[in-house]
Image (cartoon, rainbow, N blue to C red; front, side):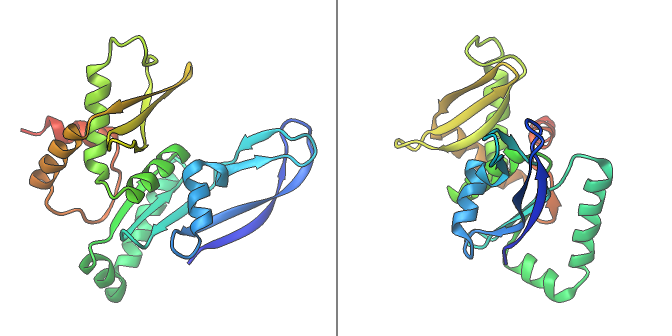
Length: 220
C-alpha cells in the first residue's frame, strides 16, 4: 500500500512554517499519480506558500512497483541507516510466507541513498529494463567520454527515458550543471546478455550502482 503523512516544514528562505506531505511508501498501482511525481522529482519538492521558494526535501521512502515486482528503498547514506535497512530486510525474510512470496515471484529489492537514484530506478522499472545493464552502460559511457568537453568533469550519469527511436537518454549531472546525451540500444542489449550470464539470479536487498558495475566488469 501507499502511506503518507503531513509534517511541518520551515522554509529556509523566509522562515515560514508550512505543511508538507511525506510519502513513507508509494505503490505505483494504487497511487499512480504519486508514482509519477516520484519519477519527476516533485514528490520531494516543497514550495513555500509564503514566498514561493522551492526546496528539495529528503526523506526515507519505499517505492513498490507491483507491475514489475520490485521494491526500491531510499534511505540516508549514513552507516546506521544502511545497516538498519539490511537488518529490517533480513527480519522480514525470516518470515517464511514473506520470503516465499518474494523469492518465488522473482521480486527485486534495491537500496539507494539519494533521490535521483530512486527516480532513476523507478524510471528503469517503468521502461522494463534491467538496472544492472543500465549501470554497466553508464560506467562505460562515462569512461569512454572522459575527455569529452560536453560532459561536465566528475559528472554522475542517470538514466532518464527511452527516446522515440528506443535509444537511451542519459543525463550527466555535476556542480557545473547537467547535460543530456543519447546512447544506442545495442550497447544495452549486449550488456544485458552479459549480466544474465554472470548473474543468472538477482536476489536479496542490493546496491546496484557504479561500484557494483565496476566490480562486475573487473571480474575475470
